[in-house]
Image (cartoon, rainbow, N blue to C red):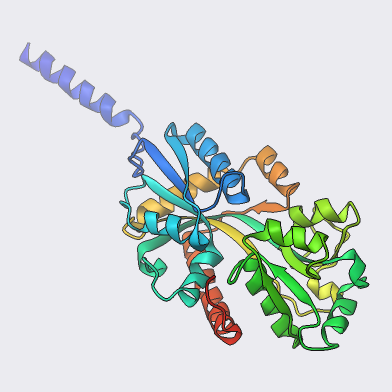
Length: 325
């Protein structure tokens, strides 16, 4: 009897060893909040909600989007920076805001290099330069010729001091050796309204904003910051084709960050989950129609590109003498 019992124990252990190992995920919390430091309905808000829905299907977790707008993303980013790094809190933000804010604000409540960890870039948006139709400019060359007629000959609307629409076109101006007069607004939407009303001459913004108004003939889109033509506004020349210096127009990148205390292993795991969750043809197609490219590189690439951006925009902000509004 003892021998028979021992045989059963042996067989049970053998069967257990034969079973495939259960994949233990390091992403423990069953509910995850995604903090969006912008109002509801904005592109990063929509992106965060779609990402949450896709991740919920993959992981079975509950994802809740919390909007904490204000102060050029500082309020929301600060909230995440002070949260636990166990995977229960993530941030969806324009990564350029994190890079630029230390040069714009004297006393930030966090240090993004230490207290925020890159997890995944998600949405990449190429920026475009447009002018009001009544300006009498038909192409990029003519735009720059007009800018060279005198200091501040072109009034450019921006989404605010230090906004990507400000820093981006300032970088373009520096590459061409021209000076614009910058008119800050509280966001791109009122800046676009000013362009349509003739209060400003030009604006740099994402393609979705531009295409809707260009179709009505109210503005002319002169150039794209994209490296190559895409299915979105293919008629608009790239900067290289228009005669400008390639790389002088940035792109907006909405990225996911975690508290800095998160382990590298967990960040890599969530990066993989995000990459697989967003690898959906229909989803990518819908975003492509809005001028958003879904692309999820490794966290190390995100950090490297942010350090590169800091080396570019830091000196530019100092040169412009820009401070936060």
